[in-house]
Structure formats: C-alpha cells, structure tokens
Amino acid sequence: MSQRGLTEPGLLPGEATPDGILENVLGSAVPAFIVTALVGGPVGLRDLARRSFKWQVPLRWYAISLLAPPLILLLTATALYGRATLRALGQNWLLTLTSFLPALVVMIVFNSVAEEIGWTGFTFARLQDRHGPLRAALLTTVFFWLYHAPSFYVETRSWVATAIILGFLLLPHLASRFIVGWLYNGSG
Image 1: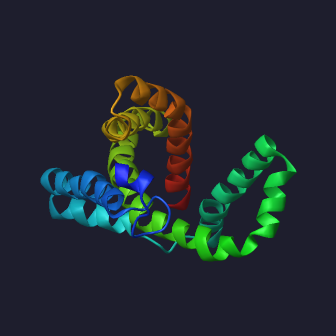
Image 2: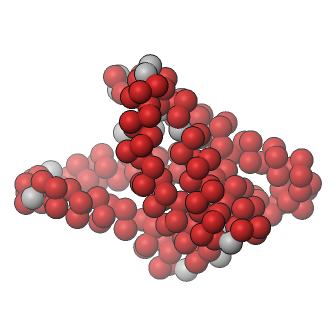
C-alpha cells in the first residue's frame, strides 16, 4: 500500500491502487513462479499454475470464502458499534452494490489472488509437505507478517509505529493463514 493510496483517491476502488497491485504481483506471485521454475522445472511450474488458477471447486467453497468475510465484518462492526452499523447499512444499501462489492472484486482478483499465489500456492504448500498444515500455517505467518514490515515503514516512516502495527496485525495474520490454509486444503 502506498502513501498515495492513503492520501489521494486511487485509480481503482478502495485500497486497490496500481502500486498495491504491483506490490502483490511483483512481490509475491512473480517470485513464486520464478523460484518454482528454478527448483521444480516445467512440471513444478505447471503444477503451481494449475493450483493457482483452479476455479472449478464445489460451490460451498465459493460461498464460504466470499460470504464469510463480509458477514464477519458486519458482525464485528455491529458488536463494536451497535445497531448504528445496521442502520447505516440499511440507509446506504445501494453503496454495497456500487462501491463495496466492486472494490471487493478488484481487491480479490488483483491483490488477494496474486498475494496468495506466493503465500499459499508456493510457501504454505511447500512447508505443508514437510511440516503438516498447522506448522506450515505458523511458519508462513512469520514470513507473511515480516513481508509487510517494509510497506508499513514506508507508510509511517517510523520503526516504532511499524512495530505497533505489526504487533496489532500478528493475530489477524495468523488467523488468515489458518483460514486460507483450511480453504486451500478443503477445496483441493
């Protein structure tokens, strides 16, 4: 995420700024394919591409992965802010269709998919083969968490603020690695 993404409107909805997309494509997906090509050759490369772009999974996995995050966000916001969240959603329901969902689609396609090729398709999968899913999720969390440190430092220009942000995000990053690992294994 760039400084421009926080202070100026981007070309794309939400936080999906072009440099944020490039960060995930060039910082996660491309290196995963390069290293896979080097260590696994054409067979490994085809396998990573097949796993990364496999979209034909049972419908329940789409429902879980696409509906659960907004529902968890809604439940959390309601728990924190009370009924005002539900009233605001009811009064602004059209924004859900015109702003929130389009931004979510852009974020999923250009940010999350690119990022998960590297973190789940490459790192988690390789670690899981050696250490099992739980240890692989823990180890991937460490690397995933540290991967974000430079961008937080660029945002804040402070190592103290970066450490605070990273500390705050450790549990959500860990939870995301467990959830994504479960989705990865459950969906095949």
